[in-house]
Image (cartoon, rainbow, N blue to C red; front, side, top):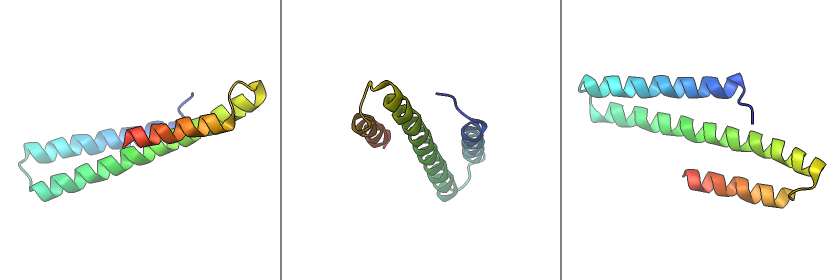
Length: 87
């Protein structure tokens, strides 16, 4: 799968969020601020996972339809399992 610039930019923003969290910790900021930022980073990661899985699913279903290797149902089950495991 190719990862487009939009997905890469999401990961770069998450990287920036994590660096910011580390900076908050190094500056001994309030735990509420740290937890808030950790929660925001987790949400961003979860959304990125969703984007990657859904993009991959669309691509896989198209290929499977062309090659008849696997059914769309099998691919959808795999995608759901990936999402469940990521939580």
